[in-house]
Amino acid sequence: MDKIIQILEELGLPFAYDHFAEGEGPDPPFLCFRCPNSDNFAADGTVYFPITEIDIELYTDKKDPETEKKLEGLLIGSGIFFEKTETWIDSEKLYEVLYSFEQEARNGK
Image 1 (cartoon, rainbow, N blue to C red):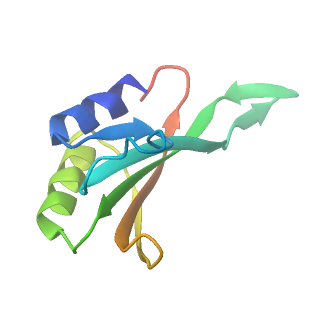
Image 2: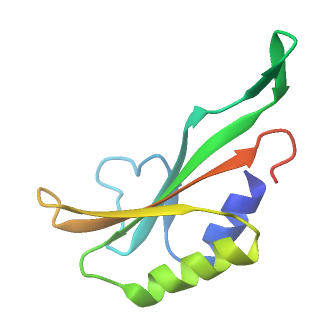
């Protein structure tokens, strides 16, 4: 998880795990990250290779290709293979660009 926090700090935008406390959310752009699942590899009836799924969510009030490119460069530069999706959240009037990937849970690779 340290590597993810380092990447987010280097990007220079406000970020929080899962969400900001009610009333404390910053103006966009901002990020949230979370670990919604695991995809562990099992052997001999035990977790042999623990893997954590990680989501980084970039929220913007207008399309921001420059910030996306910078975040993607940091992820790629750290050797992280990601999938990217985008959606407009009408109720919040925000774009959410979601970066999803897996990370070895033992040593944060």
